[in-house]
Amino acid sequence: MADWIYSLPIETLAIWVAVIFVGYCWIGGLLMRPLLRPFVRARHSGNDIIGHVLSSFGVFYGLLLGLIAVAAYQNQLPPALRVVVDCYGCFDTL
Image (cartoon, rainbow, N blue to C red; front, side, top):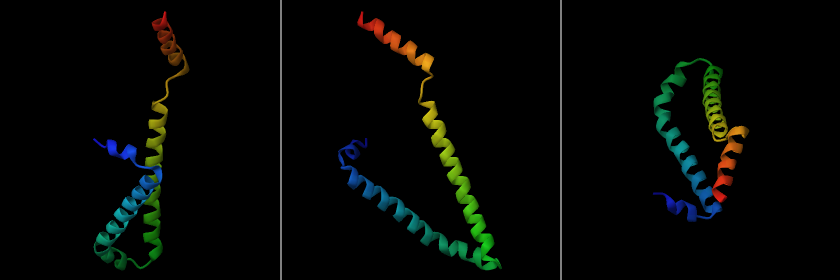
């Protein structure tokens, strides 16, 4: 389906990924500004808003980091199972 992505040079792919994600964030910021403006103006202190933004960013970052760590460790076989799998491969050569 997306086999064409493997033929792109890594520099071109990095530029495209950066442009797409930065553009997505800019468009989201521009579209959300009118919706969030009354919420921000109703508050007396800007520190509360900054605290909410930073805490929500921390929550999403922590969830993402945890999911990446779980996915990375689920792909590894335990050493005993790895030996058994290698032994089955040795019997095929006999």
